[in-house]
Image (tube, rainbow, N blue to C red; front, top):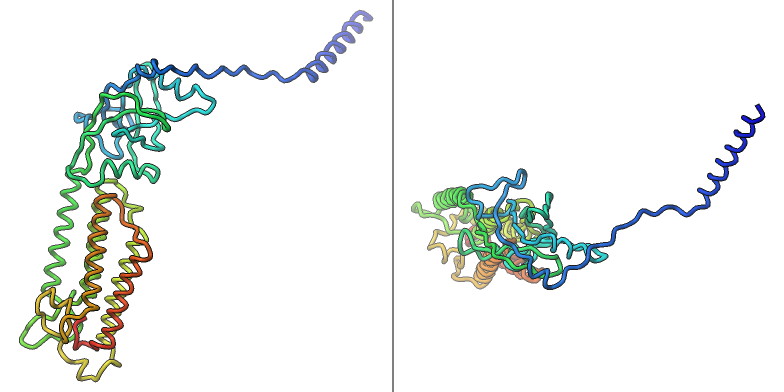
Length: 365
């Protein structure tokens, strides 16, 4: 009995001593493996991209036309000595990103998605366009002169140079099927609008029809509103066809242009219909007869008018700039306040002088 009690006391004493030792001992820090040694320049010269092909982003399957890639598709690169490049990315204290290079330009924020297999030497990327990579895609796809262009594909560190590459892909700028579909839609809309404008008063002056069954003169304000509507619609379709971006292509400039043109057309109609601008007989007078489109929009009943020419000229100039920006940069333009102010001033001058000089109905709208 005494022996058992002695053993128990000794055990408790040993347990207490072990607990105290553990409390005083420093915590055990797990060993951290050092980063791999950075490859030498000679090692890096052995890294090269051998081939590139389009793959399905979901299952990695290659289509029959694997050499043709497009936005929103996947691309797979076979890299010789890929492990060397991976070692270079992780050999420093700050791990660097491996990104895709197209035509020698890095595509920011486009990192390979799993699986990255050093043994097979494959890297896969999903081709997508965002704000960070807008300039690269504008270089590749902007100023489109054909439906596809040959592009060199490579990889490298985000802040470095691409590795040597023998891989070229055919980058599809525009999907011909969607181009044909949108082209048909725009042609139908344009033809329908033109026929309606020719047969109706959609783009013509407010007021009664001229004698003899002649057509009324075209309205500068309404023509301007129609021009900006179709420029915006065609540009929206063009940008969406190439980039697939149908959400963020409408800018504040587009809204301002549509607002200025709509406000000008509305103001012109209100001036023509205003009962305070003349007598009932004047209000019932027929609208001017058409003398041809260009003469209609540039002149009133007193002849060619400078404020009309000013508004017409600024609409034409800004329309050309608008189309060039869309074609070159694949984005709706961002006009500064000065350009928008010029268009607004010309529209305001047109409305002001129309109200004081042309009067209701008796002048062109």
